[in-house]
Image 1: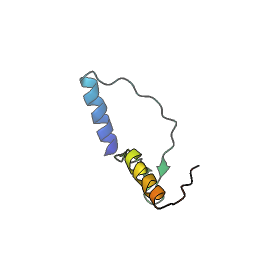
Image 2: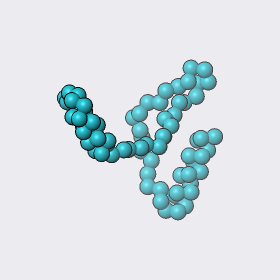
Image 3: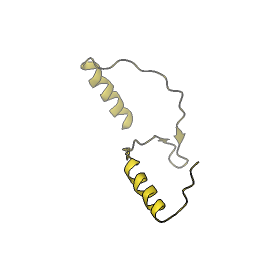
Image 4: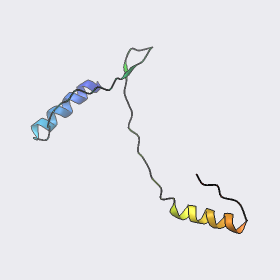
Length: 72
């Protein structure tokens, strides 16, 4: 079914003039030992947090409590 979806997406993009090209990908995909199916990567949403403020607060607490801060 995923191969049908890929073909449908390529067709839809081509019809809209948005499809550019197909390139070979040297990445090797793993095969499931039970089903023999390809195990494809699953995209996950990523997140990021600015740690400047929490770091400042942690350093302040350590200095007030006289805790040594080891940096590498």
